[in-house]
Image (tube, rainbow, N blue to C red; front, side):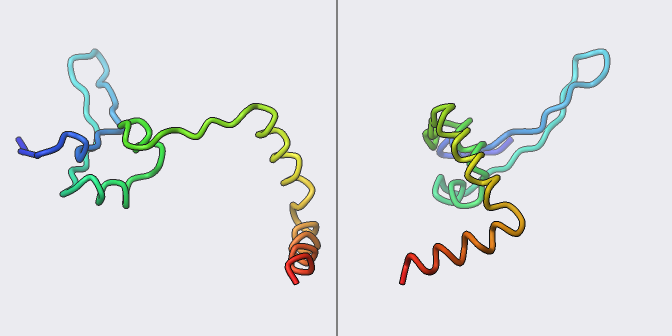
Length: 89
């Protein structure tokens, strides 16, 4: 249907199968260049396509970041921002 120079400029997603099988429908986006695709596509779709490497973080790092975020949630956020501003002076 469309002629493209690079297959990496075509992004297909959101496919759903029809009840009974035999038919699927979804969405597709075709970009002019790979750079345009990198500019507009969400990161997870670029990773799926193989254009960007996924950043692997350890389980411990994820948990530590979560616990730090818990401390600065809500009212603590204002205090943390104030402390960070003081540290930068």
